[in-house]
Length: 114
Length: 110
Image (cartoon, rainbow over all chains, first blue to last red; front, side, top):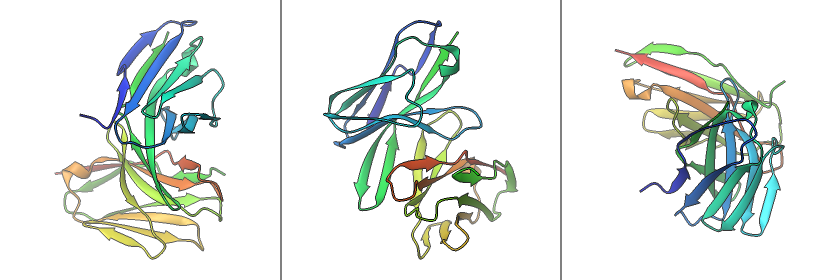
């Protein structure tokens, strides 16, 4: 079984719909992240959480919200999807040792907004 | 200037060849450096961290040049299975926020 599991793997939706992407992990890590990846661009951070009571905006949080329901669960919501939110979304957890932070990614969710 | 820059490639090399990629970063205060590998439409996976003195893992060697602000990845004896996109990741200055490069694509042919 995957250590970081994302659902769904693929989703097609229409403009204006509310969408939730879910992420769960069995690695026992406190830190969790949501990234999006677009062709020709690097992964960009949407939101991150260092523990259940901690939520932080990343560089592109507009149009998104998150919920950290438990240490193992971190969900991403698009309240009203728009076409430029079509992208490949990754959830990640991290294992931090000193200044080294290693990321472990889920398999990704391909979201298409029509 | 982008915070992290990579040549997008593709680098097309025959099996057995040695290939090297560079990645430049803009913030001299950066302390953490990594190479990740990403197969097409799959998740990135950590290939190796990059340490100040350079480090090797099998056929892969990573180097850091602080003076010129770049890191490099050398792959010896390339295999078909090395075909992938290699992402350079650097922390932003004195923060622990990680910045991803757009990746360098490697294609190894028979």
